[in-house]
Length: 72
Image 1 (cartoon, rainbow, N blue to C red):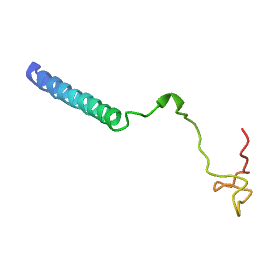
Image 2 (spheres, rainbow, N blue to C red):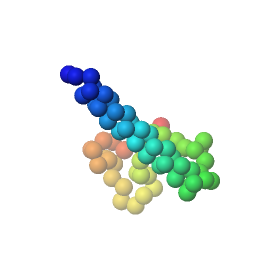
Image 3 (cartoon, rainbow, N blue to C red):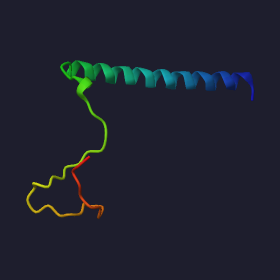
């Protein structure tokens, strides 16, 4: 492969990476601007469940046919 083609490919790769970086920065800035009072220190990550034994007509199995338990 000639050096000219390598330079063109490198330039295209650089432009695409720069474009992605700018897009991520703009997205982060928009989120910070629109949700300035958002407190991520209280955010939790994990498996969420909307099942509750107190719900009316709750079945003992989940949608995946697993035994329901809301205990950790």
